[in-house]
Image (cartoon, rainbow, N blue to C red; front, side, top):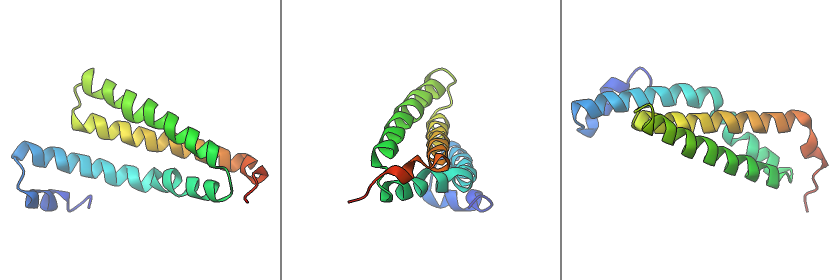
Length: 116
């Protein structure tokens, strides 16, 4: 997708400015998803499966509000990044979640949880 983005995006009949923005967002998504998506979305499933549900929920809610909402608003309103600012806020959320889940996993505190 990273390489073929300039050829795929025009298939959606966007305006030229929309095409360049979509290509930029798609390329950013490709980079962010390779680096952090597994930590942000598969690791919490493992923690929840082990019974560490509350920690996963708290990290998800806090990172969503602090990154997806607050960071996105700052990037859009203050730095005028538009839709790219919203996506960067989402990527920041992924990184914060990934770090939080990885720290929890490495601490081994999730091993103390009991599953019914």
